[in-house]
Image 1 (cartoon, helix red, strand yellow):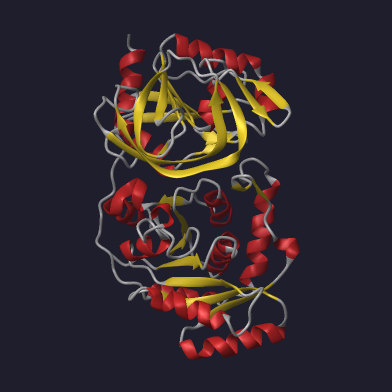
Image 2 (tube, helix red, strand yellow):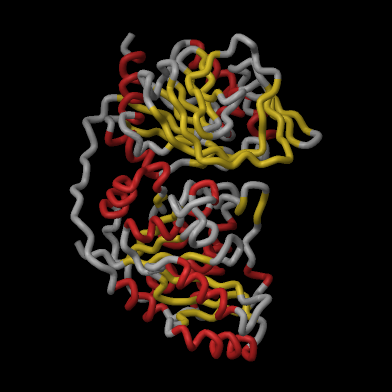
Length: 451
């Protein structure tokens, strides 16, 4: 199956991968081609920027979350555009826990057999940039590096020195982008600010993409992508007959969702109705609720003021409705969130409070399901990731947990997935490529709603 494709990776975090990837997407679209964006790793935020430029949802590719077969399957099934563009994660060879190649951009590039464009931060080097590039090319026997982009150049002379040094490598330079502080994207404690949170960011990333694309040889990148090897054809999966309605929290406070999770719920027989815990007074008529991650601490005041929504969420839970919540959703279901000197009252379903900390918890996760819950009948292995600055305090000693953490920290003492009624809330973000997760949740929504 012929799928034109390229991967944009970098030597490390902070080299401008998201801006450059967006620029490549913009440039390819300007050439009259459609683009399907992908993002390596468990990132929720960067894909929103790629989606804004591409005009279609970006999808994640992660070998830990999805497995090798899952990565290839999702990529092939969703690469129906003229070109697929994949943004890498961290440095090109940075994999699981930083100690292996597993789940790295290089690993994913090998799975989908894609040529790679390597972005180099040239801001503090000239001739030495060639040594960096050479190291990346030779670090693995099959680096797949087919092009180079220089970023953050200080002048035309600086560019000429870099080009002269890199000429001996025989790898085409397909971009040379000058340093421009006005085009930097804003960041916060978990990285870039989600486009869903501040709508003006959509215009900002489009402006950055347009500006950067003028310094990139888009035709050469298309040529490189067109030479990618054929991949095996994988049949599309059809959605099951809709039997349940699931209300999904989606606004500026909760927007961390894998596109595959939403698609998996639809394939399992759910129709999705989106609602805002900030702006809506009522939850749509539904059989279950899904509250993803996000920044409830940043939007704590707005969430606190919507008392009718908090009350209804708690009432639905007490009536037995299945609710699945992750990270930000977990925080929303506690009694309160403390963020700096401010404390915001939340839904109060769980006898616990949330407090923001200075230390980031960032891990891939692996959990054994020790108790049946709304996404598993028990005795199964779930994989995901955790990425948060918050902790739960004053947890009730009577709290029950569904997960025992084999990898990762969880909520409390290597336990995660706190249970209450038919509610499951965890710090672990799951990718629903895992077998039966979406199906089990939908079936529980159907079964309980028919009581």
